Length: 252
Image 1 (tube, rainbow, N blue to C red):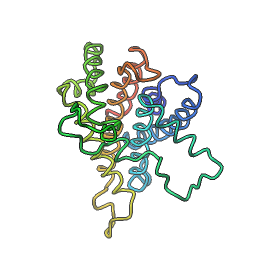
Image 2: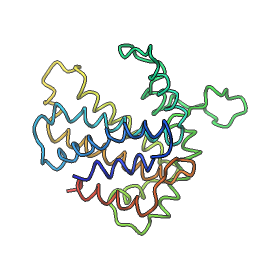
Image 3: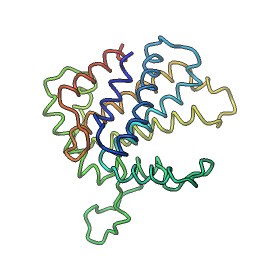
């Protein structure tokens, strides 16, 4: 399978000379590579065993790892401070660190102010979350337009789906999908069911969740490579080759 390798490149870029940040991307990239291949095997039904038990875990690891890397590419300080904190000799793995990446806060923002650009907004209310209203204004919308223009001649199902979204709605679309998938995948992991989880999480449902997760993080990473301040961006040729490689294996 080549899905994991292509996904890793698309999300992590080529990051061999960024010091500690390269180490972070190397670790998360290996996770993306491994679980990307596993998800592809389940989606194509080349692997069927224990899909309802392992599928949601695989999908959530992929989703969280990909979003963390993309956040680090536009805000490296956030990941570097966590690495420094977790490298301390007194770091306790049994305690949830307040500095750790939080899904609600770092990836999905709190409700934004009514007026993003009011002079009365306090700096603490300016969200730097990956999918916030501010990152939409500064990064995502601009990169989305640039991507659509640059890849307009390419043949791709997922690019075609993206082209149906108005630029002003791209981040909201990502935010809704990311939150939906995070919630659905989490329910497949946690023991909140008092009836067999396979009643709600049969193989077809899990396959759909995995394919939706791969689709989302691929779309996000394609656009992220067009954010001018994003680190280690790929060339157009590398983006298209990686995208085609992923679609050829999972869209059956």
